[in-house]
Image (tube, rainbow over all chains, first blue to last red; front, top):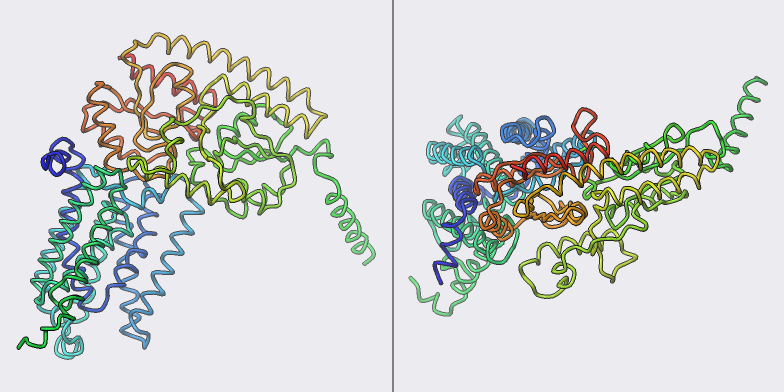
Length: 289
Length: 333
């Protein structure tokens, strides 16, 4: 019984194993970035970046069809351009970074829509852009896993300055020139993980697997290491459960995975021991030291 | 000065004249017509010949299910005298477009008189109840249909397979409807239209005999075909083949793991040896399915759009021949 429900889908079907591996790679790579986005009050930056890479990926698709390479490179270029441009404007003018980012991603999105509608051949681009976690081939899996590995490695190198930026961005900026570099490399990581996630889940759903587990983890852990561990665990659990729901109840896979993560977030809000609704309103909380 | 004034005057008069009289009354001007997608456009071109100026909305390799009209297109629709559409709810976006462009000409439904094939009973009878296994397909269809046909909300939509041109028998009906539509809008050239129709139908009949013989020779256990989207219902019915697809009836619904798993199980159990890809769909899924089941990719089929001029299916007849030979070569082995 348990075998049939939980394991048989993955044992019997290669595409389910591939989908699971792809999702786990995205979970491991993207959630730590999502945790830092949350800690730096930049959660919506992830969403803006997802829109920013979409036109690049679309252009890549128009240039050479459903080529993994072209769509990846296009997405990376568009995302980096937007990140660099908005960061540059924020640092040399008085416009705040969130405003300039919003401006640049909207410009990027408009350019993308323009390119697609004037040169497109009406093949269902949305279908392409919404990702196909069930159709990950070998090259896509290798790409997802290497992006996740690079992301983890870079994050390990940046860990201390990033934590400082979270705690006191003014301090880091005043004592070290590394602040700007840290910030841009971090944005590059956001873009990279979104591009990877886009191949598996589509541009918009990729933001979900990045942000939701991190937000849920906030209710379970207090240290950064704890947050990352809990977030990655929630993301992986959501992937498994979402894929199984898609398998047993004929639901589209990407939204199913993100919705499970969303349910995880909802449960965390209520039951999470760190600042969750119940924990915070229990009468005996005053007795705590 | 006087010459400028008279030029202006005559221009105004001309404008007023051309506004009050439809362009069709100018015998030497070609009749402006619009066809919704490439396959229908090719047939209209064949029958209209040099007497028409044809605009095809969804061009080669385009997917008419998800087409988004542009203002330029709305202009050519507004200027057209005849608008040819497939019907059977294939062009869900057309009603809005024709309305927005205030199209005042004649609409010719090419499938008028076709005996439509219902999509499999499962989908249209269980449409709104709690059968989870098809929930996502039904949802998508409902949204699409309600958005596009607000005025018809309430009755059962998308019950019939619109890909009627996939049967050569129906192509004759298409040709009849097109010729009648053109003759009505442009009676002076009616003789030419009917002559072109006759020539076209002769070719259709020849091809029908060829394909009929080809398909008859396929063994009984080699008659199941896997394609990315359910577009070959009429072809299947004519030649007694079974087509299965993971994506459901339209290219706009997202596939679920259950659909893919069901298809893979079927391919394994019936030891289907070849799966096919289509020109207008995302074929990564089919490639994965082929890899997983050991089936080979039998080739590319053209379902809803012709290929570009250089491709193997740049006309309707070439498309039907290409599909039939591709199927035959892959299944016959």
